[in-house]
Image (cartoon, rainbow, N blue to C red; front, side, top):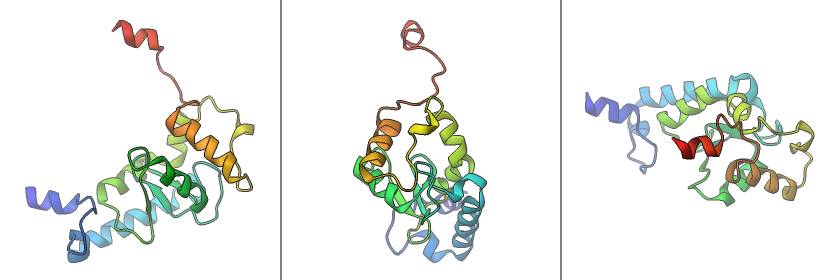
Length: 157
């Protein structure tokens, strides 16, 4: 059982001998999940700028789909913040794909952009500097996040 679970939830970080390359059914499962992720209503556009251009990049830390331009900024943040992989080129582990399948761009943004004025969100024609500032504010500073309790409440418990 442990071996079957290990194969099913392989993180895709191994080289050519990974389970996906030797197990066709796992590869088929991963491809089916990727197709499902791409068909989700809000995953057809970038979670950060709403671009529909080349939105085939997944932040496996957050489970959101982003465009090629924003993916470069995510990479600049470092893998400890956002690890970007291609839905079409990389072998993404099943567990990371399942996170994206259940998270969705909309679900993530409902929390991470709850306090964002829509006029301040980058759009597909925004400069890279505007995107960079926004992505840092969103993912590093968590400036727009929905707060469920105050800092004082956390300290008092």
